[in-house]
Length: 200
Figure 1: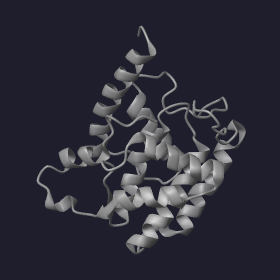
Figure 2: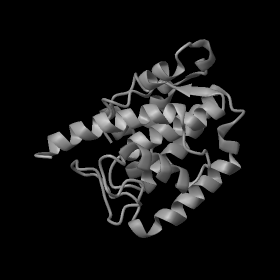
Figure 3: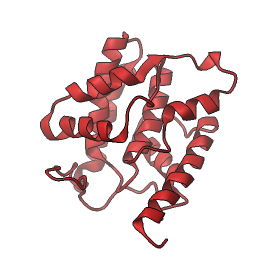
């Protein structure tokens, strides 16, 4: 690689190909930190030696005023608490659309704040939450949401404890599940993921 731009381009292309593979051969849905690690490894194994490994440094977004994510020493404990709480909520099964949107925003923010990896947390989360939504009878269509909107909504949740922007974002994203109505499920799903233009 000769520059950060080259690395970003290669990362986008390679992780896109790996995301396609995950649609047909998903990692086991264990609803825990191990599942996130498996997703992250699969997406970024061609790019980073540390793909799937928990970060070892404290990080924050490279924008003015951004707060640090969860300190590195608390990642495993906090993730365990997040997934226990999600299990207590029956992984969001049986909710109305309004309830699902609100609960998705709440649990998304929790895991986003944990931010277990140095890079690629956003793409990893899209893969994970798409599976959770599908199991709960919903579908996530990320195309109406651009990266900057996602960043600002997530920052409002973690920095200001304001879930309103995330709720409004997911209100655009959550749709009724119609995967069975499509002949080429994988092609439609990768379009809904909108993973190529998305930056973490």
